[in-house]
Image (cartoon, rainbow, N blue to C red; front, side, top):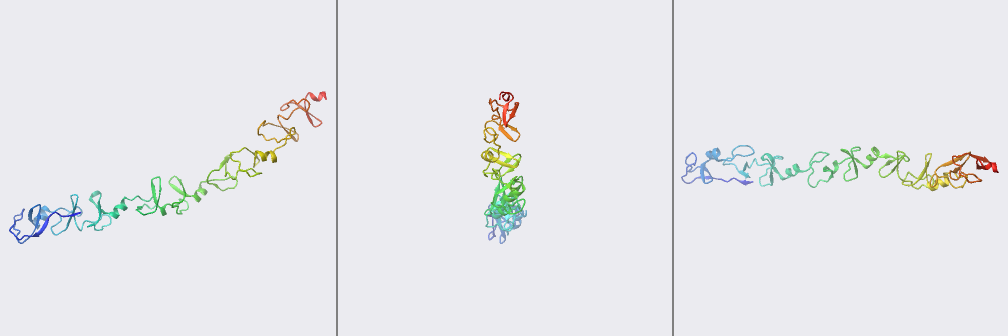
Length: 291
């Protein structure tokens, strides 16, 4: 802001007030825009009005001006903190109010979503989807501990640290009962850790592989063949349900692949057909008559 554009002095020569025509010789006068006037006429007619206090800026006052706006030097203060702005940097804001540089920076700074106070230059902060927090204000919605720059999980308008998210939202493994924080798989609508869904015999992971469930145990194809599957009374190989033929024929305490259940004499397939057991062997209905 600059000083006023008039001169105050004491007249030593014969001059009259431009307005009231009273003699100014030996009196205090004001010269403005080439005109001489008495102090009384100056304050009544010529003086600028302070934009802050709305009173005339008299000849005995120090005037400051900026962009056709005028202030008493004592009125030229920050609207926010009241600090004098004479010889200080300032900003003219709405409603013709002047602000110091510190208050301007604070007012224009983004607001913390936690404490709603400004985040000024130098403050550590966390940003997420156009929202910002002081680092110490970014806390877990559950345990209230500071998340800061650590990992977190958003849930609507709330944010959770890894530990609280696991306990509150993560699915629980059907085997170990611990939270599943990443990956995992589902079997019969139950969630499992990949490392928990394993063959009961060889302990290899079964995710994405063929397996067989026996009661509450799971087996890979090889272990099921070796350890669990019944052996075909015909070919002596395991009956797995994998590969060729999935049907099984059971008779008394023995089992056959459907394609192995055939007449001992003529080799006719007997699955879903009448057969005769003679001396521990299986025959079609006709062959025993020719024995």
